[in-house]
Length: 346
Ligand SMILES: NC(=O)c1ccc[n+]([C@@H]2O[C@H](COP(=O)([O-])OP(=O)(O)OC[C@H]3O[C@@H](n4cnc5c(N)ncnc54)[C@H](OP(=O)(O)O)[C@@H]3O)[C@@H](O)[C@H]2O)c1
Image (cartoon, protein in one colour):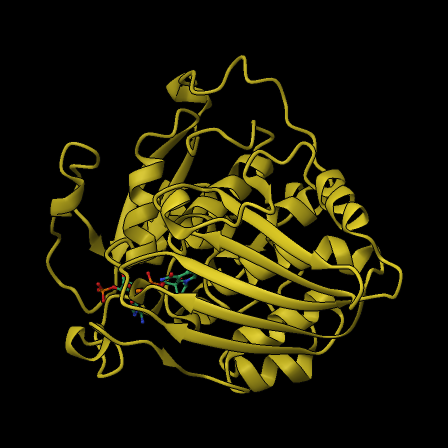
């Protein structure tokens, strides 16, 4: 799981215009898409050529929150323009739209970074259950958990970026599962800010429903459960909650350790896994908080171990719109382009 961090000598140094990759963002009017535009407009090694909304939006318009960062208009989705004016495209679309659009753009020679769930599940039957709009996994699809699959991401045609909840849970538990320190099922108790649900309000995400309240939802029916199980290879009980925050996720993960596992072994396994990972910060017994990672690409992980009973509780936090979406997607772009992973996001 360890990855190499290249020298930071050229971090942030602008590439010449000719050598910059041309990138486009589809879904730029959404929460994740706007975050992508914000990062990519200032990224020193790429040129943001297009930012697009749905085709239903007929008039090109600016993004007021991004004035002086990105002053070009957002235009309706047009696959011909994307193919003509970019080399790499980010899809920050609902998964059914990604399922339609990604194969077309791959066919036209683009490399695709998809933020939706459409291509995350490898098993056909499971994918058919959770993402029925996806016809097939295109050749060259890689699950884009940056810290775990960097080598495969480098050669990917389609990087299927992980979900926000799975990113935090997997970064905490995957090294322990890989080291065979975990037995039985894993329980993930997760709390998310409302932006995780996207910009279109529903009764559940309405201010009056959330303000002053906390609600569980999606028990045994959330698609991220299948994604976490796929990557951990064990049974997972995943219980998400909506909390009255605009952004951020905190997950409390309950794990049974193989008898005899010590606290030092857990700490050493996590430290070895992330020794060179720029965006994973291990906090040990000082448990992390959402405030520490909001608006950043960091995932902070803390833990408490009860050696006599073999119980471990890990607490993991990230910003769902950054490490859980746009930031991790740009981290994957950096890997794909052979750049320092931190370029444009640290
Ligand atoms: N929000 C998160 O924390 C988060 C985290 C990780 C992954 N994701 C995933 O990232 C994707 C985007 O999420 P989001 O929260 O940013 O969603 P969002 O706020 O609802 O934005 C959706 C974007 O897609 C566009 N769009 C909608 N339907 C479309 C269609 N049929 N064809 C083309 N464009 C269409 C919208 O354009 P208009 O403005 O014209 O409607 C908007 O730009 C989703 O698949 C989501 O699951 C989200």
